[in-house]
Length: 128
Image (cartoon, rainbow, N blue to C red):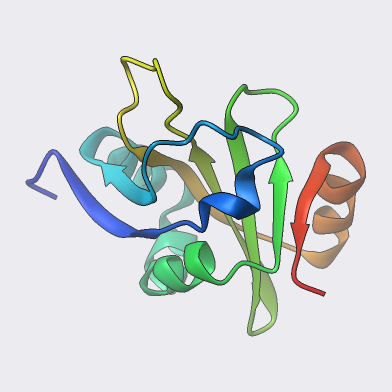
């Protein structure tokens, strides 16, 4: 990846109101630094499923508030025999570091582990 970042898709800001109601942009990007992180830590998941990242972001099954990181969401979608979890750091007003919503990491999650994530983190959106 030669660019500083690439555009991946757009979030529906209304689905993230319980995390922050001051998100200035819908854009979601992947920076070169995070791209390298994902390739290093989750290469197989990235190669198998990254073509579906836009769909996961724009049509999630679940959005969870990450209890460990401020202004961060877990955006999850069931795909084929697994679930894809994209962690997004939301850009919020007066945030000088993050002017766009950005993908922090990307990996697949088994159903058993998804249930644990849902139990431990606040659900802010559920498609069902």
